Length: 275
Image (cartoon, rainbow, N blue to C red):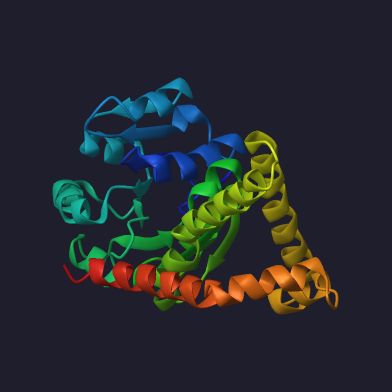
């Protein structure tokens, strides 16, 4: 079980109960990092709280109650809600709290400006596959957060998949690459499966094969450490099926389009902090 930075028992809180909160806390719960009785989640409506209530977590409509019940608090609201939430809880934040924002585009500087002086703030960028413990997460520390806070968060998030501490400048890029990138992969998987349906394969089977193809390709890339270009070349044989198919993808501008998608999502994440 993970320990709090100060050595006391870890009690997790989460303000917001949507998909990203479910992904992060779901992974932590699945790995048994924290007892569900030590987790408190708040949201304005009952709809999303049912997920956590069904798992045995404490739920509330009061954000202040989360502060009273927890020493590590995740902020999992929409980015434009963050200022309102921090203003609401500001008077209840103590030196015993560690605040971790997973809101896209809200910088550490902004988070610290909206928090009491000396507050321990970290900023993270997760993605949805955290719920099946195959996520990709990066995080950065604010000026008052210490190494032990970083170690605590990394221990927690190891339950969710890959976790790296990085410079904050990488976080918005991670949003464009991986946070939003999951949707790009699903679109590609859908297109792969639809191509097989067009050629006569049943939809359910083609979808399973597409998913397994992506899973296997990703695992090979991680385990070998090889550059994607090398692995792609390994699949191609002179005059074979793959090089003919890749030619069509190049004609369609796949690489340039995907690069532009990452750029657009990254820029949008950066713009969110300027609103």
